[in-house]
Length: 586
Image (cartoon, rainbow, N blue to C red; front, side, top):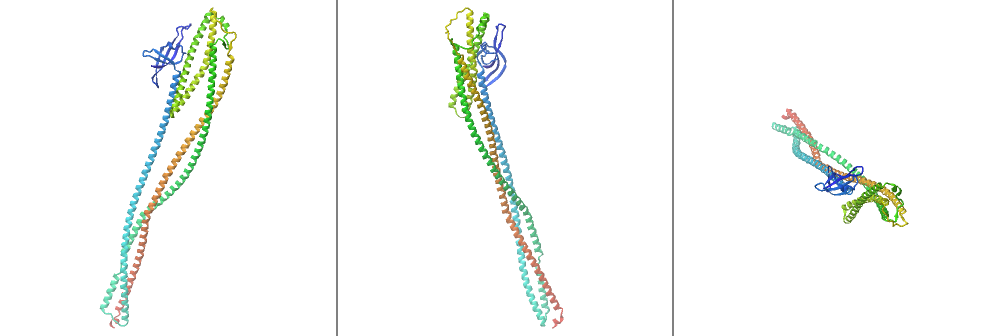
């Protein structure tokens, strides 16, 4: 099983004896991406004696807790952290996507609820319209009934008028006969008793033939009451029609206002769209400039790496060549005066330290080789990838290149120090061999190659390149911050534009709904108008007919009164004739 452990070195006595190296287990791997902490356990591991105290390592243990393999944990931990960062980014993207879906579902649910409420309201309005039409139909039937009653009254009045005209004709005939009778009386003609009785009977018949109008008048009053009742029932519908007309007019004004608002918001959206396009064009320009500067920085880094490689090769050449020397030499005089045992211990310490440093540099170079292989593998995958996978691989490649650069820069100084320590160790070993009486073969030429000026020149060029690279990286950082700020502004403008588009869409929906509601309201107004106007026209027509009947009835009443008055006058004339006996005797 694989464990993450910390190297612990326990010092021995004064002479360094008895030192031992242990590993303190910190966590164990359960799966590729799953690590669990373990109870602190310490195991002996002399294999880690070359590592520094406190270093983190990955150790593979057998079932009987024996160390099988040890490797430094730097690179694996970096890979684990990178994978963890990618998992966090993917999780964050998934969370954002889930939030967007939640918002979309919430908006859809609200829209469905609103439409359902609109449908219920319209269903209630339709039910009210059906009830109103049913009541109007009942009113129409009542008006038809009243019209039939009025037509019957009109027929009865016409019949009475005809009877009255017949009575008038009869009365006129009797008047003519009376006039003839008066003329006969003046000529001496005498009425006998039978003629007098016949004239009296005729007068009684004329008196009883006057048509009574009270019943017709009562029925006419009842018809007027029914008519007014129908009008009172119809008036609330007219009032409701006026309210609906005012509501439709207000909604029409609101439609015009929303239309103006929609035009203004469309203009704002177009302006925001134009501004966003300009910002995007500027962002593309800045991004292209940033890319060119990054490419130039990459070239400088490559030159700097070449300078460091040259510096390293010269150091290596100086380390293995006896004809090359550094400007700085070890002071040999103190070494000549130092006790031999102390000098031996010093040489041994230098050799041990050099061995540890060499092992560490070797591990770092292996790590660098691993990263170079990883970079080459990512480049091969990028050539075959596409879409989102390509973007992820490019991001991973940039991270690996940054880590490679960091490790490589840290190795430059370590290699240089290692070469210097090797040269110093060689000089100490030469002094020790000389003091121990060993003969030293001197095959060096009198003229030594001093590599100090060359190294100084290379170091100067490296510093210039480093300064230029630092300046360029500062510019790149500033431009990157500017690009990020522009991207933030573009993101805000995009959100603002999306908000304006959403407001525009909401306004369009509100305008459409209001247009539909206004059209429905005007339809109700027209429908009420078409339903109420014929009924009102029929009521007005009936009112005119009833008024005409009332006027005719008044004329009939007046004619009847005249008839009764004429009968009374004839009766008085006959009475005066009957009361003169001399006329009867003659």
